[in-house]
Amino acid sequence: MKALKYLNYIKGILIYFGVTIITELILIKIPFPKNFWTSNLVNLIAPTLTSIVLIIVYKDLFKNKFDDFKSNYKKYFSIIFKYWLVGLVFMIITNTIISSITKSIAINEQGNRTLLNSLPLYSIISTVFLAPISEELAFRASIKDIFKDKTMFCLISAFLFGFAHVMFNGDYIYLIPYASLAFFFAKAYYETDNILVNMFMHSFHNAFCLIMLALGGLV
Image (tube, rainbow, N blue to C red; front, top):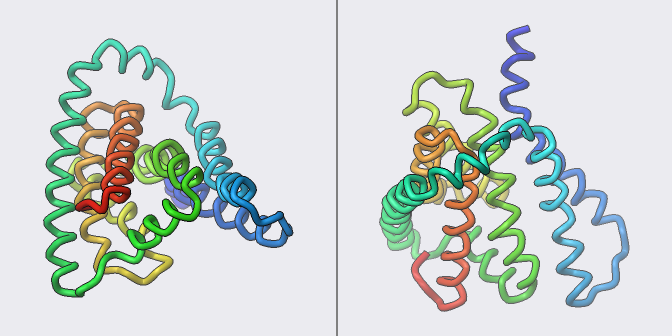
């Protein structure tokens, strides 16, 4: 029974990886025509489906949260800006230190730059809109109730988020910058208990990063 209880807690993470991987394995077998629109749209199928499934599974988390966000938007925007700015500073500092040692940038960041050039529609929609939904539900909302201790929740959430961004490329040292930012994302969620705050915060950050990448910037 206890095993089923904890399995229920991490179902968001299992859905996040399971739906994504299974969908992509199916799509690989289908001979889609290779052109700009088809390539962008086909690549959007997996993250879109993952986000939809997670929203359905965690639909109860959204009850009254839109009204709560609207009623407390000034407070929440203050929290968003505070934690995002601190997290961004930590992310830039750790990224800069690691890059100076390794003499390279994160493989995930290289991939983001490539996607922005080759699949811009997919890159923008998945990064700014879909990833904030699926990742906040999987790595924040789904595991919050496991932990009674705020710091432990933030640390585990940060580790899982960071690991998810480096696990398939082996660039494990760059888990640190991703986890640095994610730690403060988790703090924001713990403080507000409104997943919409995190989705907005995450979306804003990703949009900022895409703009910086397009301009050859810092993050």
